[in-house]
Amino acid sequence: MQLNARSFHLAQDSSQPLILVAIEDVTEQRTALRKLYRSETRYRRLVEEINSLIIGIDTTGRMTFFNRFSEKNPF
Image (cartoon, rainbow, N blue to C red; front, side, top):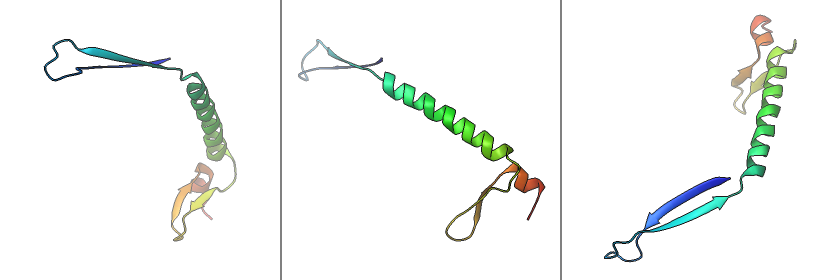
């Protein structure tokens, strides 16, 4: 659960503040983020540790990524 609260006055001359409280169930969002993090971790480990050249190149032909194997074994 995520709790948000804000105090405000209904009128400028009001001395009694009101508090608005919002409670949001973020269970599904947090579960999805945990799954995404685990998936990204596995993917990064695979890409970094595989004994194959993995190189990212953008549309201009500039290299944007290369894994450790590429560093040790230039093509």
